[in-house]
Amino acid sequence: MFSKIKQIEEILLTVTDSVFHYEAMNKPDQYIVYAEDSEGSSVEGDDQKINQSIQGTIDYFTKKDWDENVTKIQEVLKNARISFYLNSVQLEEETGYQHYEWVWEVG
Image (cartoon, rainbow, N blue to C red; front, side, top):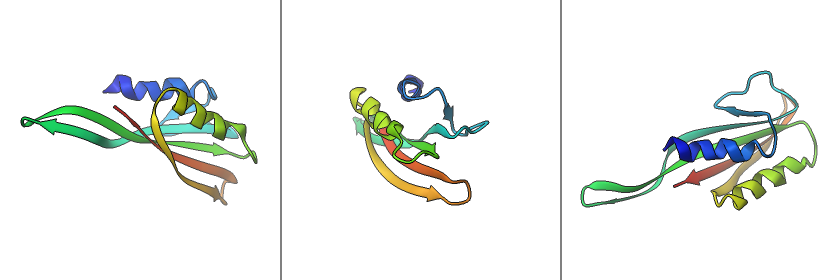
């Protein structure tokens, strides 16, 4: 299971070196936080789990308009054949960050 989750970090590091798991420390102007959240789609049969997927989120925070890393994040997920969707985009008025959130799933 952990090797599947570690794959998320590895591909995000191709976008930026500022990648954190669960919580960001010393927040730069642009950074990514990823976390596994729950079990995704699974297959059970004969009273046992046959296939399990893990679902989580990627949160990208930026203070740059039209930040090219937004596109890069989606490209690296697609190229790695990781299922994802853009869940929300919001402006955090207190911090000035634009916040993009994707939901991903690995199997």
